[in-house]
Image 1 (cartoon, one colour):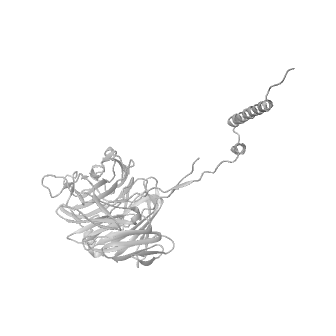
Image 2 (cartoon, rainbow, N blue to C red):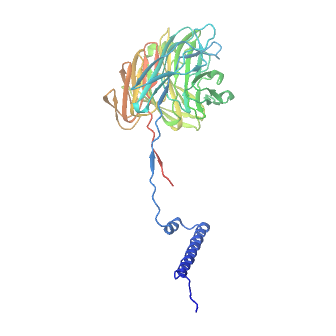
Image 3 (cartoon, rainbow, N blue to C red):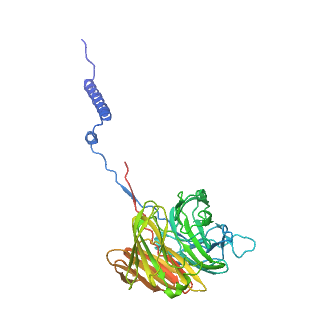
Length: 476
């Protein structure tokens, strides 16, 4: 008699294993079908069952310290026009809650008081402050009165950028323009220049690949790049390491130094440019000089460039109490134009430039008399919203000039006091030396004018940089 000793559950296990193999084969087949026929993702998810939801994470980048670079010494050029020279240190006025001060390590300026062609020790100042400490501002200034250069050099201290536009100056006989490139960073900056003039863009290989070492200032003669140019505009770009670019403009009339200006950068071209701070003295102050040899640039003027396309431009000069003056201009692409703003009367004016194509713009103003004059170029201002600070040196009479280019009135808070600026108008108000605050919910444009009978300078009120926005990271 034979007995079956097979386990009672053996057949059952065999069936389960067989079924599992069949299911695995089906799943693999489905996956292959999905891969080759591109089955919709929704169908695939339904086969997979519920998928866990992974949370998104907001990451706020660490805010870098605010860094401002001041202009350093006022710069002129040697008699041969190739060597950059300075004459002693500038003075800085700082506005901020917890600023720190440092200096660059190197400059190629020569000491104008040295008899041995020694390098200047007066390097630009660096002002820094934690972004958490609030707004920061500073102004650098110097009054020079020597046989080589006379006048007021004054400029707001600015942050390094990878693109800057410099509008102003001349390289004609008796006019010197020095280009200062300052690198406050830790890596070498490679700088390229595009120079525009009255006949269009000026091609020069000397303006390409200019190396500016970390912590250093390099100064070039603009005449070496654009000789005998009556209306230069310079675009400065870098390979990623930011620099601060300025033009130092000085005048020699005959054998006498007579005027000085520091031209700071303005934003990339746009269809709206706003320039506060144009001051026009009484006609009898400068009128007698206009016909004298060497004084052809004593009157106020506007410089405009449309770099890429022909443009139709509307220029509106705001004259409180006298009525605005409007003019239409036609610009050729890439060609710089200077337009006279003579016969406007006397007062504190503003200029609004509206264009069909993006442009850059600056105005030139002068003060003085028969024995001495001074000149200042002031470029397009940036829009201010939120809270900002600015600092005024104790040199001469000072006024803040604010423009509201909008179609409705706006309210600003200046040193804690509210002021309304009507639509499309300019407001000028005297201010003392020192630190001041400005706040506005709507875009307003501001410049400070410092002047007396024979000194004139401008500084822009800069917006406080916006806080960095959080970055959303979603795991997948």
